[in-house]
Image 1 (cartoon, rainbow, N blue to C red):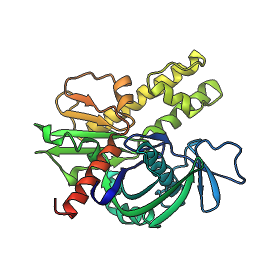
Image 2: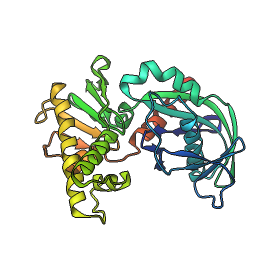
Image 3: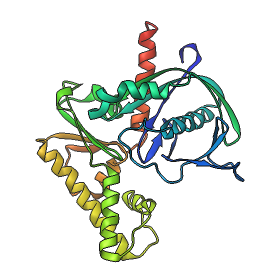
Image 4: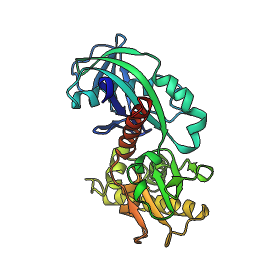
Length: 305
């Protein structure tokens, strides 16, 4: 990269954090004393944080507290270690849902670039990072940025995320801004509905990790009655996404639809529609990879290349 800058794409999900090579649960819990075991432990400003246990609670936005700043440091550490580096100039390429992009872009950018020079430890390894810049891009678009040139017709890109479902029409290989929408019906709402139904029918809730394993098409070692409830509710959730698309004016039999994001596999595994016009990008890291690609392009443009 130009001037030895490491561009790191980070997808700050409410359920999972993603970079181009890493996926971990969006969780940062402060530990009051030095931990006995340094497994996914961030040490920053004299405090210890356990990364990747119970997911963060959904807030109005991600700048309300320090959680996503701490998770950003963890993501940088994981990605730099993958690249064999502990000291680097870093360009953060992040994203926001389509409907929140205009309102939150500036505040999220300033949140992520609050400290230019940051020293911290991850799993006892020291990282010395200079945040040279931050760019925030629209998610959903990022997931298909490397494919848009191949689109030969109108395409509806549907990003099924943890908190929102983003719907973005692309015509003549360009997004139609005024028609982009985000709906707060992401996978977290599905998991809440699953547990409401489990409690109503069976008297107990289940851990979200079990629901997620069923979403991935796995068969968890739990009672069949719970598996049945979970699967039924996931089917209902997929139908609700289809219904939202129909309300938006999408013909599910003829319109070219591309499902992306963490929920793309859910739509594929549990969807009742198997038409040639519907495709799936199943890589959960696709937005993060797209952010990184757009960050690299932004730097090249700035340098006149």
